[in-house]
Length: 349
Image (cartoon, rainbow, N blue to C red):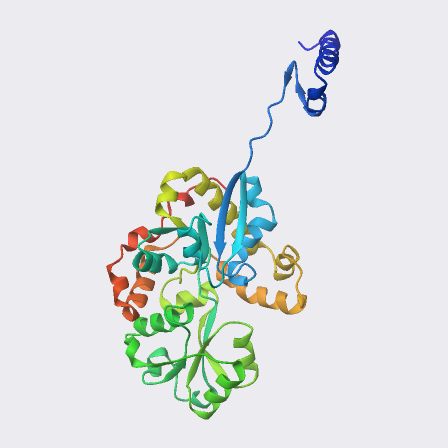
């Protein structure tokens, strides 16, 4: 039993040690003593660097929240987020050794395997939709009732293999059409696209918030497909659209499974936070913005992307892969099974 005499001995021992070795006085005084033994120092956190395709973008809410709310720290990780929306790209930062992994849309794992010959794996897919809406010219309301009715039409999409282009191509394929059954137009400024839709130079637009709501409010277009919410995406495509994902080189995943497990747990906590809090509470956890009201409205729409459990459904991955390969045939040669793993989702919450 621990007795008062033991406490006296402990105090005498500390006085002796601090007198004998003044250099250690501060460290000893700061330590919390277990009976007769100094408590061991906490292990240093493990450093992980992630390149993010737009740190401040709402499509990357989970990863930013995981950092802001201390979830990575709780997992024993010191995570650094590098903003990489353009050049150098996330995959270039990984290849150069400046990043361990990345956060971007899942389809980047398909691209990295085909383009850079680097096998990367999504270890947690946080987005279940691309956060987009397909809008059709108001003048065509009585003529366009389904995706199939867009055959032969002109649609503002996005860059090659962008989320916008992949979304339209996937919609077309799911409707039984080919991607050559429509004409893709390069996006430009909002007002110019609105005028093109009104005049007949274009027939439809795939758009993100807040632009989508603006097109609707102006009476320029009506909504044909909701690819913003997970529910709407399942209705339009038959499954989710794997979007925002944390992915790492397969070699890193195999060499550092504990790091990956902790990263996934932190991301799952962030997903839970998003799905149990309203936009105002989510915005309050993030850095302040110039227009808090507008930012909160944007979050209220984009948080619908994250209604998921973090898994990558194999059927969804394969459908997205087919949509991308239809535009870029070389992607058909990749191993889709290597682009994701759900092995780390079986972790205690």
